[in-house]
Length: 149
Image (cartoon, rainbow, N blue to C red; front, side, top):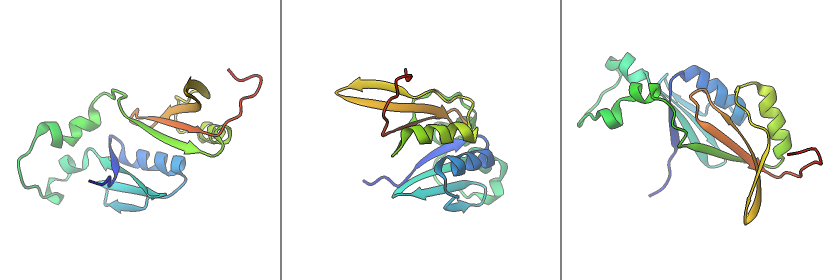
């Protein structure tokens, strides 16, 4: 088995595309109309699934096989409260510079400061969320200053 992509079911497709284009600093790689958008970068793939497309466009989506509310109700997924059990983790060469870049983008009202945790090795990171409340964590090279923490 091989990982093809990680995709997020989103409640606002265009807003999420703009968010990830800014955060990832790349345009959408491919798009399947307004249903699915793909970001391919560095051998990875993160995709966005418009949670409302199938329900809003039943004439444009052909389905076969058993329908399961649990797996197939994209509207319910898009509207469900975010439980924060999923974290996208990124790494950057210069954590301090990336922190400033994300703050200056203004894409999230929830940006933490740079944090530290140590279990075997020191780990510096900050977190923010996407338009659907998915947590994004960024770690990387970091040298603390005297006034940090």
